[in-house]
Length: 206
Image (cartoon, rainbow, N blue to C red; front, side, top):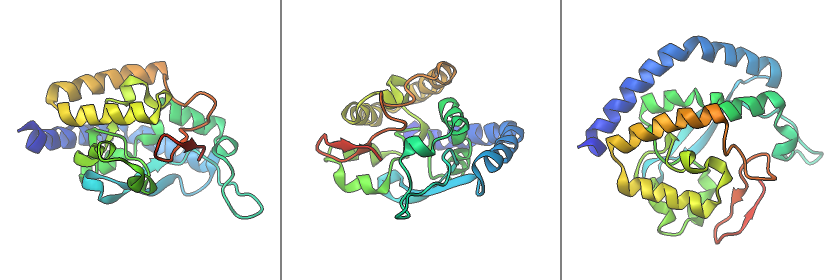
């Protein structure tokens, strides 16, 4: 019952309340992003959702627009500013995703939405993370966030899919707040962001 109906009701009520409460903060961050990183302030990208159906993800931009001589974006470490790093470490960059929750693209709790190009790289077990809607936070986020390996992250995502419940979602939301305060597991050691998932346990930097 909760998986089919209760989770969506909880998402809608909490996301609407959170967005109304956070509107002044969202406006201030929007102004600061425009000032520090330029326009547009929002980062929009197609991501796979429930059953791998694509949707448009909304986040605040955290990297400056910088390209090499060939027109390719510079590495993340060179584009991520101190201000952008602060937004990431506090998860303030993800506030616009409340709109995705209200629209029904995402849930408050679920596996994080990754990149479309990862879809053919998953094995059958890893692909099960798309049996539920992606979330603002998830079981993997409170058990290491980006400090764990891809294999560990996907195992945690699948565990959540198999054990989804109201109690588990409430637990994850409370532990997420605690983790944000402690700013734990923001990056993989030695990387500005999470290394790209290449499949077959082979990874490279984005």
